[in-house]
Structures are given as C-alpha cells and as structure tokens.
Amino acid sequence: MSASHRGSQPLDLAASAAPQLDDDGRAARTGNLWTCLAHIITAVIGAGVLALSWSVAQLGWVAGPVAVLCFAGVNYVSATLLSHCYRCPGGPEESSSSGKTRRNYTYMDAVRALLGRKHTYVCGTLQYLYFYGMGVAYTITTAICLGAIKKSNCYHGNGRGSSRCGSDDDEQNMFMVLFGAAQVLLSFIPNFHSMAWVSAVASAMSFTYATIGLGLGLAKTVGDGAIRGGVAGVPMATTAHKVWRVAQAVGDIAFAYAYSIVLLEIQDTLRSSPPEGETMRKGNVVAVLATTFFYVCVGCFGYAAFGNATPGNVLTGFGFYEPYWLVGFANACIVLQILGAYQLFSQQIFTVADRWLTARFPESAFVNRTYAARIVLGLPKYELNLQRLCFRTVYVASTTGLALVFPYFNEVMGLLGALIFWPLVIYLPVEMYCVQRRVRPWTPTWVMLKAFSVVCFPVGTFAFIGCLQGVIKKRLG
Image (tube, rainbow, N blue to C red; front, side, top):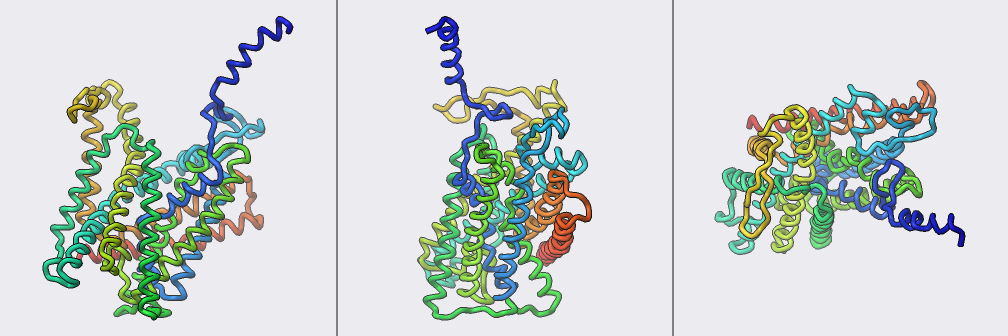
C-alpha cells in the first residue's frame, strides 16, 4: 500500500462518517411518495369534512357532488402548478443563466422569489389572517363538540329530547373559555411545532372521526331503507335566502380542500432522487383521488341519511344519538385533533412575532430576557420570556373572544375557505407558474391559465360574500 493511499484513508473514513447534506447545505431529506401522501391527507382531512353533508344538502343531489368534484379538480390543478415552483433558477446572487437552482422552502418563499415584495406582503397578510382565523374556528368547533358529548351522554341516560339535556349559550361560552385556557398553557411548550407526534395524532384522529361519520351515515341510510333529499337541495323561503345558503355551502367545500398553502412545505421534505416535483405530482394524484372519494361518500351518505334536516356538522349537529359512546368518541377525537392543530397554525404566527420583536427591540429586556421559573415541582425550570407570555396570552384571548362573539361553525369555516380560495389557491400559483416556466403572453398555455384564474374569481367572491352575509345575519339576529 502506497504512502499516498495510506494518507488518504483517514479522510475517506471521515467523509463516510460525515452527515449527508443536500445541495442547499441542509440535512438530506428522506421523504418519499408514502410520506408525501400521509402529509397531504393529514393537511386535507380535518374538521371541514364534517360540514360536507350540510353543503351537499344545500346544493342538492346534482350540484352537491358536482361541486365537490369540481373543487377537487381545481385544487389538483393548483397543486400541480405549485409543485413546479419549489425550485427556481439561480441562487440569491446568481443569474438564471447559471444553470443552478434554489429551493423555495415555503409558499411565501416562492412568492418572494418569483413575484417580488408586493405580492409577498399580500400573501403573508392573507396567510397569517387565515392562520388566525383557524384559531377562531377551532375554538368554536371544540365548544360544539364538548356540548355534543355532554348531550349525547344525557340523552342516553334520560331519553332523547329530555328537558334536562338542554344547553345554552353560557355553557358553550364556558367550553370556549376552557379551550382558550388550555391553549394558553400549550402555547408555552418549547418547539411544540416541531413535535412529530402532533401530526401523527392529528392524522389518526382525523381519519377516525371522519370514518365514524361516514359509517354512521351509511348505516342509517341502509337501516332506514330510503335515500332522502332532493335535486334542488334544502328549500328556502325566498330565492335570496337560497342563494346565500348556496354561497355558504361553496365556501365550506373550499375550506375542506384548502391545502395548497402548505404544499411546498410538504415538498421540502422529499428527497431529490427521484426529483421532488415528480414525487409531489404523483402524490397529488393519489391523495386527491382518495380524499375526493372519501369526501363524496361522507357528503352524500350524510345527506341521504337526513335529507333536508342534515345538521351543519354531521357529528356535532346531533344527527346521531346512538350508539352514544361512538358519537362521544368521535367528538373526543375532534377535540384531540384540534388541541394540536390550533398550535400548529398559531406557532407560525408566534415565530414571526418573536423574530420581528427581537429585531425591532434588540436591547429590550422585556423582549429578549428570559427568567428561569419552576412551574411544576419535580420538572426542570422553564425559561420564561415576558414578551412571549404577554403576546401569546393576548393572542389566544383574542381568538377566544372572537369565537364568543361569532360562534357560527358553517359560516366561519366557509368564510375562511373563501378568503384564501382565489388569491392563494388560484391567482398566485398561476402567476408563479407563468414566471417559473416563462410562459409567454397569448400562447395557448397562458390563455388557459388566465381563463382558469378568471373563472375561479367570481366563485371565490360569491362564496366570500355569502359567508360574510351569513355571519352578519346571525350576529344581528
């Protein structure tokens, strides 16, 4: 063995022991098609799925399933466009002719790299408004679920319709306050957003309660031996009332499919061989097909079981009374999922706020200093920061307060879905794709994409106005 070869051997061993890195210097990503599917389905299937039966009921047997299928197609196209925007030419200081590409780790990174600062401000405002609104929606949903568990147990013990089992606004408000108190405590768990078990539990809970809702709707339909409902959906007193209900149903369906804003974060977990875009597009096909089949079944079986009396939320609206333990278990699953999901959305706002305040007030002890405090005997001391304590407490209190003022499940869900549908799901992906792929104006591809954006704009606007009208109408009595 030569001296030169002997001298290089330790370097080879050191290289083999070094951690593998991707082309951006970060730890090698290990995600594959299966993890991609799991992340997408976890992002798609949530509390919104239980409002689908109500949405189908408002639209009827023809328009209801067609609307679900149309939104599936629209979101598939949007996801496909976005998957091409994960990489863009050149690094931060390189020209696009260099042949090198940079990764866009988040949706906002892609907007910043491809469309510039103004679009980034719009995107960020809508994204964080959506995240904040999700906190309000989750607070409402939790209160309704806890009330449903209490009522289910009461009906089982005292009989359906018992006067002892009534609930009032004070009870629902108490449940919201309790949920808010729990979220204040959870907001101070360090690195809560990076705990893998949160997503795992949320995914399991989502599938559990959605499957229970599907199974109960199917069982009731088969047991009754009849398919309820009609072609025109739930009749309303006036045409205007019907139009507003249709708009709210469209918003709820849009909410149920809202996952484009986290798609690039999912793509950033995938390994580079095969290319991330190819894996992501395969995952989109399978995930959209699977979730759409699931959504159509949940929506249609719920409507078939209850017809025009379909509740706003197929489990919490008390369409099912027995078996009471199964209804209670399903609602408990919703609560468990929402406890973690609230933090997964809110922690993104907390992180941005912490960074901005630290940069804005670098010398402030209130913002930057931490104090060691033992919260629970026997556990390590907690690093308490006064700025985080105040900001996160006020944040949770504000979402709880809004939920107390606007405790309207279907309308709030639809409003959030409609809010982001056109700007974040349609317009920005189309514009980013055109820049990324250098689509020239007035070519067939450009015309089709612009037509796609133009057609979707009135749909999103119609749903937003209808849901906003529903919230205001209920608030004013």
